[in-house]
Image 1 (cartoon, rainbow, N blue to C red):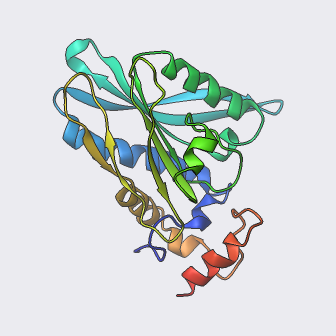
Image 2: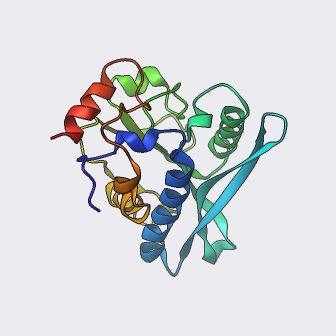
Length: 221
């Protein structure tokens, strides 16, 4: 089932669908990287746990690239932002805690935000990212330099294909490419989302600025 949108499918942003989308996407990104990282590195899927409400335990996955030759030191952390990270509450607090931990270390940080709704949560200041022009989705790469004030940004609009980005590794090892569009397409196909989504209904993940109507126009051709 090929995707009907050229890039991200905005219907996948629906909070009811997102947990499944997120878990598949993390695994497919890690699988894609693993083929290029061996034998020196491995792409490990890890998770953090936080509690929402009185008794709801939430597990959020992320990727750690480990340097096998240096005793499995964490070289790069790759995050895919979830809705709970973009609104006040335990999910955002948990994300911010992990973000500060990585930024205070010698580990590279890669953040992928494929959600248009909610507050800005990436490590790059929002005023700085907006200088790149309008965007719906944003990927931010922050390399572990002493200042940590430089950000490599990959902005994209709803009609754009999602980017192929560069993932930094240890020392002088060259970056490896990561094809986000290919991973999202695999999520869409393996999750049978074309059969599960009612494209005649409004795209409820959109914020109130006309994006829903745009999504519907693209979906209808």
